[in-house]
Length: 564
Image (cartoon, rainbow, N blue to C red; front, side):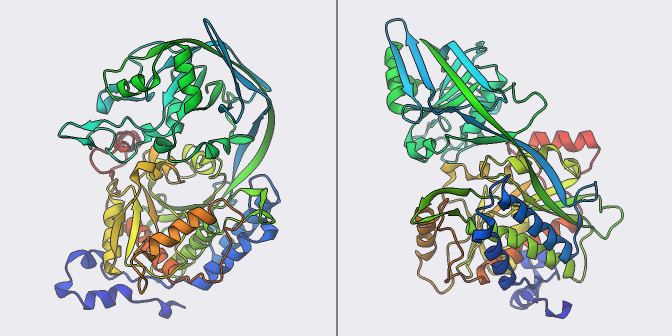
């Protein structure tokens, strides 16, 4: 009932002088009531044994899609697709290379044979039963980056067609000229990883330049994870189905261990450590390695039809209702896998069933709110995040609402289940005007914003908001706070560390008896306020000056004749 809505901002305003500052910017809008028990119930259903870990293309997907669609209908959301359905079909293909394959590295005097999962991990995105590299010349291209804004080009105009590129992972750690013990904040974000450091960028730029293969040298520190994680990249990998069957991608993508990389460079008469140091300089020149790579991948293809689920709340302004704000969360997880302590179902309660429950209840809050927003709101539950953000990538490249009329994406990855906090973490803080919206709303709750505590891991490029950002749409990736009310100072860090160590991508990621949903409700009210304000704003949110996504957005809006 409408009279139950909380007057949180009104209470805060009463404590502030003259209705000024950030609380005044929040205006008289009040936070809605959101049902924490309902979120918990959604999570219990989606993370139950019956849903079998919600892997795309399985019974778990069928149940998940049906449940989310049913909830959207019961709430009163309209079908989000223009065909009158709640479903956007996402064609994908699983590609499994034969694990008996080997990688041959042949030099003038010796030949090395690397075993799959031991010395290298490789795959192909091409939809072909057999993919072959035969005596592909190898070339070291440093960090494999071409970034005009930093006057950086690791290719220097060299033709790489047919070659196998060897690259270093992460961004170049360029020293600060004023303090050599620190990184230059003006080049590749200093301590923070840019998209140039992500391995997905490196494979894509290699393919764009016509390389036959791309191998990244694994180093635990720069990668942020051990070789055991890279081994987990083996086996079946999904990709989106494309018209050219991904033949524009490199035939081979993969990783090579540091030990094997050093042997490769020695085989080529080169010193790996010396070349690695040289690669930190923008004057670095590509280094041919007199070694060739050969591999034959026999591939099993497994096409599936997966789905995004979308429900729409139509805006109440006839002139603006064709513009949208998106709330997104991925419904998928890892399905059934290797048993741990006798449990083989990877339930994915935090990752990401609870967030799906969150957007369902956020949608309910919008519909029940006394005044509907001027613009429309699209609630989007996407598939295959765990396979490389495939569902969000598909929507962002096949949008239902034109991206030039999409004001923002607010993406939910997990939700706080341990109580209220004094703060909220924003991954990529400082990227866009959306940070200003959430700053003002957080201030109305008496909370502060906290930047990503580990910017070197590049988390901004690893969740479902990123395909929207890459296409130019301002995107917000909020995370849980760490200053828990009534708890010791280190409580937040401890529960985060415990989750990563014991539950993340494990069967034990289940609903726990000690879950307490007040913090999740607090966060969802905050995210609701951001979306509501953006949907009623006089102007479009913008990227901050210097953002790597600014030019794409400006060109997009200009081409569509949209005034920001």
